Image (cartoon, rainbow, N blue to C red; front, side, top):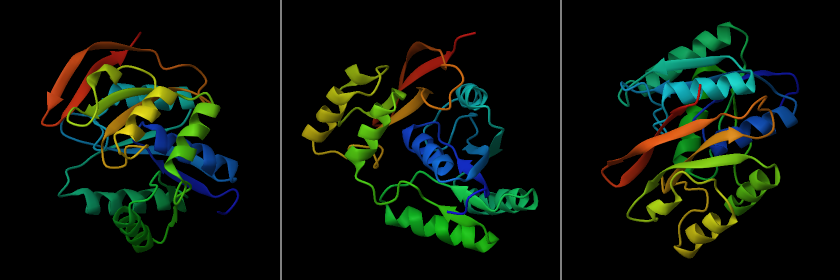
Amino acid sequence: MNAGEKVFVSWSGGKDAYLALLKAREAGLQPGCLLTFINKDSCSMSHNLPVELLSGQARALNLPQILEPVTWDSYEETFHRVSCELKQKGFTGGVFGDINITEHRHWLEKACARVAVNCYLPLWGLQEEDILSELLALKAELLIVALRKDLLEDKWLGRLLNVDFIQEVKSRGLSPCGESGEYHTLVVNGPLFKEKLEVEVSGYRSEEKVIFLDYFVKK
């Protein structure tokens, strides 16, 4: 990593993107914005988080936010266009929270090379349990906001990720970090947050095999 390099952070709102942001800063990179692709419902493509929550995180982290509408069909070309626009503004790299899915890494490296920006994956190759242990040691507060109801009990929804949850995931033979979509988190507090993101749960909803929290930022 090149110290002082201005980078954008691919932002899902979850734990992996957050730790990638922390590690990028530790390495001397200069995160200049959070980039999130959103769907037609104004939710993040990756974690289905509402824009209201993503904007709350950006304010708490004191970082500019870019919300880019996209569909899965237009994702590649939209990524290319936005990366070109950011490069023109002085961004020379992107930070991504991928851990071990090779296809994702290859796609990102190819997409970044197409624009001639550096592709940084600070979590790549780390053990998933070590990632979670580091986040807990940092006292990051990670709210469990979605899970596969065929794989995990819905009692975990709305709770903070902790050692008991990690043990439950491991006991079921699942990816500790939920790399195959077993669960998703929302970071509500931790290092770099100038204030906690206060959220209130309003209900639950199911979409196929996934159950989501419905929630909003407290005013």
